[in-house]
Image 1 (tube, one colour):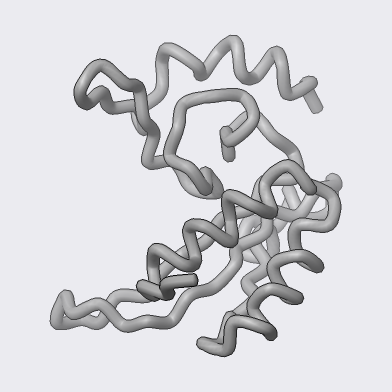
Image 2 (cartoon, rainbow, N blue to C red):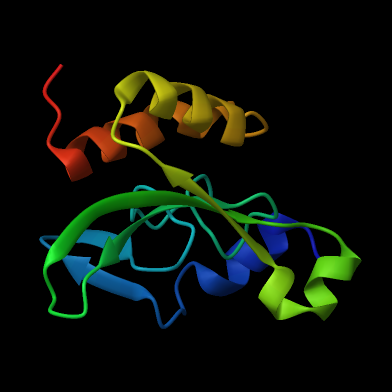
Length: 127
């Protein structure tokens, strides 16, 4: 497996997920919490990547069901792509969500605050 810095050098300017808006460079890659094109948030370059996803209804109506997606590491999971991703469903109770986010992001403490902010924006919680 290559180090994340080497992978980042390959995908930072040339990726199908990159788009530009108002002079900023964003990405729509999976496992990117902030949608910012940087090594810190990159889901492609980081081995321990995490993301927050929203489930959408077939009628394109937004359902307020949010889940944490976690990319597993190791050689066993890379051989079976269907087992590469783990999902953790989140409830609408802010206290339970806070604990689940902190537990899921335990190895990426730098992303805990960003994940909580994104969850609040998704559900429209004002604190």
